[in-house]
Image 1 (tube, one colour):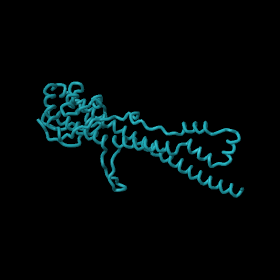
Image 2 (tube, helix red, strand yellow):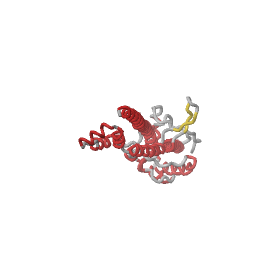
Image 3 (tube, helix red, strand yellow):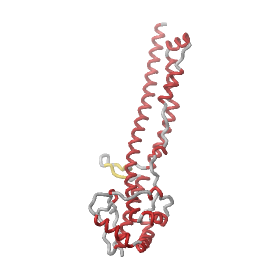
Image 4 (spheres, rainbow, N blue to C red):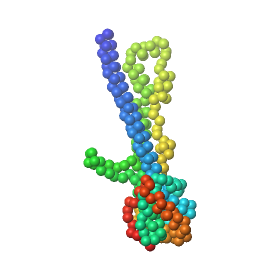
Length: 274
């Protein structure tokens, strides 16, 4: 009997050890994944500030309420409200106002450059941007909105699996069934671990991540500058003609502030315009 009991205890201990490794190993892996996910979310939030800075500068050039909304309508952006709420900041100053033969030409080039920078920032935020990892010499993609959304879905699926398959209450119940002494005590005293198991379940069960609670901004998809360049130029000419004095002052103010640190919108050259 003693030999049989020792064998049973040894088997139970081995099974419980494997269960503990599986239980805590899976939870540790999930917690590490959640921690990495949270870090990526914060990285994406930093990209939000870049997009907002670019939108703020473009809104400034377009005289805010006077023309910004009409500009997005002209290039057929359906939901630009999240971009329209931004104002200019020191982050969005150009290092140098582009050269042109007239103030109107400078204005058109400013708007084209500012839009180009904003479109690229939005696209990188939504879809990511590929870059070459210098250490591993492979292409990787930057953190982006779509990636975070997919990761959230995958993590929530893993949470459901762990809550279902590695339920703390079920693990305790299984461990109790393997322990002869615990079963005998329950039989004699009539006591159970049910209340304790429920308490443990409430404390250890993972809660799914509510993606909306992350409050990540959902920017609209902007068309590439090359596909709407004629519309932008035409819009700028009309805007300049109606607001010449204000736009001339705006350009003069920017020229006075050249050289300050800020967002460099000089990504792609545009030929001088009249």
